[in-house]
Image 1 (cartoon, one colour):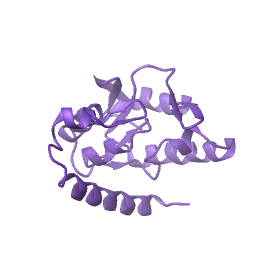
Image 2 (image 1 turned 60 degrees about the vertical axis):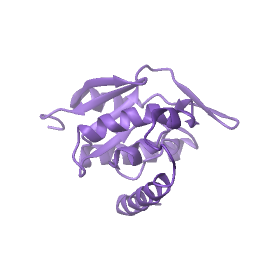
Image 3 (image 1 turned 120 degrees about the vertical axis):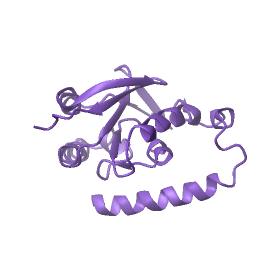
Length: 171
């Protein structure tokens, strides 16, 4: 089991490593270059658009939640995830007990850490395939309820809805 504090250390190390690698790549900020790289049906250029929006609308200390199998958005934006679940898979795939526990942890982290922005698929009904696995990426009902109560939809970029924390949230 990984604690949220340990997850922060792992994230910080990943950012350092990715920054070092990116500095070696020619044209690393060029959207045509990034568009070559696809993961889970999206391109790195699309992820960079979302990450740039987040980076331009947050402080370094702000946390975000990305409900997509795209942890690179955290690294590209230079923002820490809400708690230890930076990767979506434990929340949507696996034994029911494990998924339930991961979702409970996420909801507790959401309440405690109040991410400044949440990124979701723009429309429900999304599926992803990973090898022989096929799974829904729809957010859980409890997450959608919390977002509806505490966030306002601010933008849509590359098929992702971006929600901003309301000033009167988590009352």
